[in-house]
Each structure stands twice: as C-alpha cells, then as structure tokens.
Image (tube, rainbow, N blue to C red; front, side, top):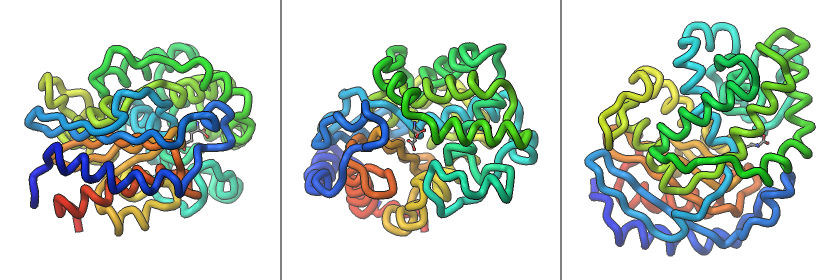
Length: 308
Ligand code: GLU
C-alpha cells in the first residue's frame, strides 16, 4: 500500500477535473441549481494527525445527505441499536432512488437510514422536546464530529429545501400514517430540512471520516464521540447504502465506505487509516458527485486500498 501524500492528492484532483463536465448540479432544489459546478476539492486527514488538502477544500457547501450519518450516530446514542433497527428502520439497500416512496406502501419500515424515508424516521427518534430541540442537539453533534465550531445553517438553502420539499413531506406523512414516525411530522421535517442545509467544507467532512475510521474517537483530541460498535455499523451501512442506488458500482470501483450528498460532498472512511472529504457539486444521474467519485477512484488505485 502506498502512503498518501500531497502530490497524490493533487494528481487525484487533476484527474477528477475532467469529470465535472459530465455532471450537473442538483436541479430539484433551487439553491443547489446555481452552485458553480466547476468547484472541486479533496482533503485527507490521517489518524496520526496529518492533513492534506487540494483545490476548493474551504468552500462551504450544504451537507445534504451526509447529515444522515450524523443523525444516525445521534439516534444510536439516544436509543440504541436494538430499538432503532428492530422497529424504526432497516439495514438493507434498496436499489431505488434516494427519495423513492414505492416500498413504504408494501413494507412500512424504511429499508435503511440513508434513504430519505429512513433518515426522516431516524430524525423522529432523536431525543428533543421539539423539532428545534432535536436540531440543536444534531448541530452540537455535528460540530463535534467535524471538529469545527463554525458549522452553521445556510438559511437560503434551508428555505429552498423547505419550499420544494413536497416529496419529503409525502414520505414523512406516509410514515406517520403507518405509525412509523415518532413525534410531530412537521417538526421532524423541519429538523430534517435544517440538518440537510448545514454549511460544511471538505475539511470538515474529512474529519468526520477520520472519526469513523478511528472507531468513534476524535483522532485529534482523543475524545470518544461515538461507541466503536456504532461507528462500525455506520461504516458498514456507508459501504452498502451510502452512494444511493450507485452503491454497488462504487463498492466495486472504489472499494471503501463513503456517503454522498446532493450538495456534491462525499465523506469516505478508511478504517484505522484516514478520513477523506471531497466536494464537487456536478452530480451524476444517481445524485453522486461525478468528479468526487473519480477523485476517490484515483486515490483508491494510487494507494491500493480497496477492501476486497
Ligand atoms: N435534502 C435533500 C433531500 O431531502 C437531501 C438528499 C440527498 O442529499 O440525498 O432531498
């Protein structure tokens, strides 16, 4: 296995650049439509404290579905593995698009915590007196996992999500109607829209990946931020379900756990080695950063780190 280094990251970035032209920014959320699709950045944070950055790693972008990782971590901490997975959400990939409603009618329980229906159900289980309280706790957990005090809501993205979030409302009310959602649907949705609209950078999510890689312990401070078993569950789900209905292809091509968001971010985690954060807002048809996948594929080959 080759060691990560600055020039390797820069080469990965140059390789990835060609792929920004192959995608387009998410069109269904007006705020995301107008983001510059040529942005691209990659940051790797190793568990022994080294950080390498290339490209637009300090440009803030909305975290979108990567927030589902943080919500799952908090829900596991609040309610435990047995409660969550026996009653509220499953552990299986779907092969359907991330916002699909089709299986809720026949199976009731959302297939996994990384599709929208599953994430909304997970947010419902997070402790809090109100949606605002749940979100406040989510934000605190976010800041810790990303090792950044500056993470904050992007108001414009939040309003845009809320305005165009009818599909998510349909999912939440369907879950409510079938007794699969805890709490008030409107409040849960508000916390969900807010967590998706948090501003992060590639450096922030690289740290999140490093905490997961370090089995739940912040590699910088030594503080335990989640149980080792919870970090293992999350890494496993990232591998099987983290890249929407492109997870199988990504596992073959790249070969390590990652979670993407329609804001163009991807967090990847290499157990006992490093976290990687990529940002490239041009998406492929499945909603994954086209250039981000190319960068991760390049690194995977350069370091020879595929798990299988
Ligand atoms: N806020 C987005 C939605 O609910 C998140 C989707 C994503 O990143 O996959 O549609």
